[in-house]
Amino acid sequence: MSRSSRGQKKKRDTSPMPATGAGLMRYYDEDLPGVKIGPWYVVAFCLILIVAVLVGNIVY
Image (cartoon, rainbow, N blue to C red; front, side, top):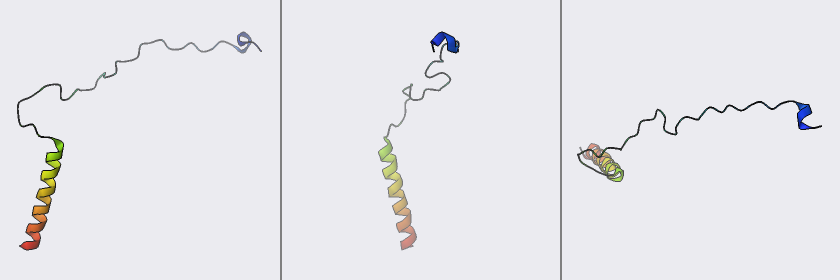
């Protein structure tokens, strides 16, 4: 059976695709003044604070 006897294929939509970041906000584009600390320091500080609170509850 030939392709033409099976019928026409559906025509594809040729509308353009949206841009990759369409509608998405971009963070960290601006370099604002302030304290710059890494995430590992924040995690370490939180762990130290948790341990200090637990020790304080046990001792007192």
